[in-house]
Length: 309
Length: 230
Image (cartoon, rainbow over all chains, first blue to last red; front, side, top):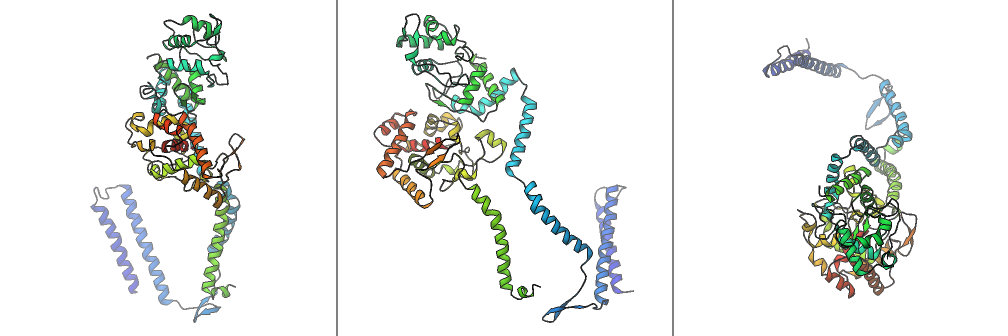
């Protein structure tokens, strides 16, 4: 018996024994647990194969003699045999070349990872999810969504209470402020509030039908107070004579002609969010990163707070 | 077959380097060249905008604010379209920043306005409750450095060929020309014209007075710069 086989056998027994002990000492031990049993079988297989392979090659090194034809070249007396290529290696080598061609011509150009592609896929998926979950919501849920849109995008100017933070932006707790009405009458307006160019003339184009003359400073102030107060108090006659022609007798506007100045409407808010606005206070930027539903939701929220709900 | 090469290890190493480097170059250079060209709508800075950019750098805005919108839905929802490398073509240096203590500013011109910036720079917490951004009151008093801005314009025009006085295509299909003033005097005049347009939308009395007197406070230059970031 060769010493080598003896040592191999001893080592195998030791390794398998150590594995068995290690498992035996864990909680539960072997205990008929199939996983533990498999682990022991696996350990036996690994130990036996490892040692068998090592023994085989060590034996080969001990007993083998050189044979075969030497290549012509040698380096400082060290030469190499002319061996045939192992078939598996040769197949892999050729396979690599074929794969390389495929990868160069088709694989990479067609399947290359693209950050933007990933982004587009992500956006598509999110939009689909949004559609499925929110496209149909209305009523209370739409207002709730509008509140979160408002808190994320509008509060920086309009404030958390939507009061415009001391004149930094419009107070949305009411439809329109007196200064804004005065400004619009004096300067006209072309803010795409109807979604299209539909200019309102400035004071040089606004006649009071009652007096037959251009609207005066005093009249502007009276009618502005009337509109800002929710169509109450003095000024109804001026409104009827000057504004009602476009904005309607009750100030609720007319489609394609003039917007509702009595209360917020969804179209109005959506258009302001889409095109932005310039008025008495300053410029409001367009918020075009919001999608259509989010704009409608913001409108629903603004309508609800402007009514004091 | 390669005996000749194998006998010359240094030459062999050089050869290997050249082959691999060449492969790398033909992969990198065409795409790099394409990506660094200005995108449609990117135009050189005007004098006032450049002065504002210097104010931005001087006050280390880039320490807390990035100028790089990554292609993630969460970011594009908040800031707008993701940034393209060609948009930085005229930024020297670019101000990508590395940390967002505050929000990204690469497209701040789309969703903030002159008067908002004015309120915000004076007292950030008054507009954004709980904001930890400090106030920058000195920007309302210090005057912007138009000379340096003009010097930079001339330099980038001469050294890097930044296209001043040339037609530049805009996003809506039109053309726009950014003028390089012929002298410092003209640069100051041009900057003052721009400053007047910005100050018209501002509320601060002192700033308006300064601009009326022909001085340009830093805040006006900074706002001109921020408004341009779209």
